[in-house]
Length: 231
Image 1 (cartoon, helix red, strand yellow):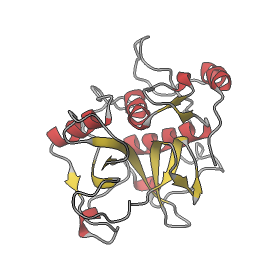
Image 2 (tube, one colour; image 1 turned 90 degrees about the horizontal axis):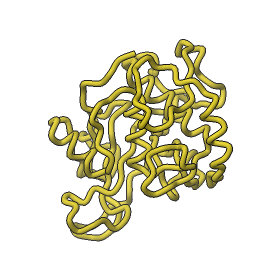
Image 3 (spheres, helix red, strand yellow; image 1 turned 180 degrees about the vertical axis):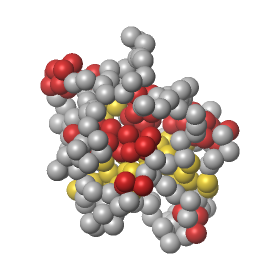
Image 4 (cartoon, rainbow, N blue to C red; image 1 turned 135 degrees about the vertical axis):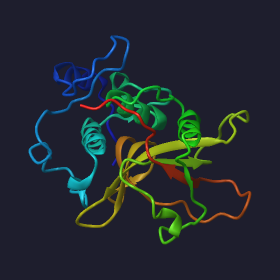
């Protein structure tokens, strides 16, 4: 189901929502998203999927999940080069950058390759060469981890490594067991239906490729580097 572009509705909605986190923001920072100051149990909308072991997530990662669900509910489109919902949509790295900035992580890079370098220099990146979730390489994956791909679209030859896509892992649906991720896409699926825009998607791995073959490749994951501001 394709997201509908409604910039005027997004602007109106964001203008009246209150950002419920205590850290201060500069006026030049992106428009704050809708949130609530309610407790986790009170702050879970009936339309949101339940996640396995959500109550055991660190508080900062619970905030990431709730904000990802709120962003999904906005119905934002895919807007290349945007990192602010006021534009009616965002791209993949823009949607990740926006959430992390709003939740207090400092010095978050804007482009996907910058975010990759950020985690690589922190020494937290785990490479994945397997093509199924059965690989032992997934044993350290946790909700809130950043996910990286190459080959999802053509990037400048100067970008090395050629990271082209980043999203956030949110966990497993408590009912179906399906893995859920957050970010922006122009054609991934959510609950089996193709959609475009900012929000939730199924975490499916690309089909296997032979070495050197063009196409999308998932390359690994990393926890969000610390430190970050706490509520």
